[in-house]
Image (cartoon, rainbow, N blue to C red; front, side, top):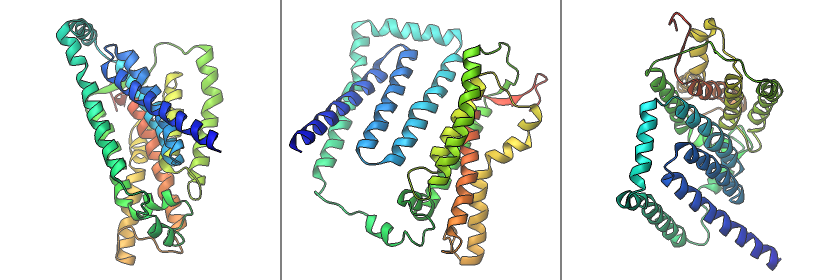
Length: 321
């Protein structure tokens, strides 16, 4: 037992050092492509760290969004950089090679050490055992409509935060669309490997998203994890050259994008008229209402992430959106 404990401490120590090293390298790397790859590796290790902290829900979200989709979005943004911006990046690399540039390169390391020291001080100053709000969550779990405490917290005890998170994601997409449109056609056909991979993985990813959505009521999963997997399926389809029809890019797409926040607002208004509270679910209908909210949120999150990867407001060859 002592040997296993020692091995666990060694593994956690190496994991923490690996996270610090990857964070430093991602911040100081002058090459944008390598920095993105380091960021993706950091996200994967961070997901493993959340698993070690017994937080599988956060680990799923970190692996799907923090490492997977965010890395894909950064790669897409890198591909859209203009040649002038690439030349600016080369000049930055030349500047870093100078003594003054090397000194500036160590500034993120100093900031990282200060933040790590602050976090370490906070953790070490905590009492050995803190109950927090776990007792209150456990006491009210039966009336929440779900058996998973994480889902209960997200949809019951902090439903306003969940609604605002979805609104922020939608605002991010609107900000990208405000920069201009993107053509729906693709000039080059995908290779046979990518085409086959998309045909095999996309149906599997849709099934995984449906499973995560359904299982979120009593096990790790839920709308954000399912939406991230659904968004990954959309990204894979876009990489394989699939483009939706122009007719679907008008009001049907916009309706599905606002389905998540819209369902929250509609149900909150109905509950306010019936119960006198915005998001206080009746015990008898709590389960079905949460399932409706999570289903709408999954569709909105998945489409929003895929639309962000597309990189602009969809339009046809005539410029119509």
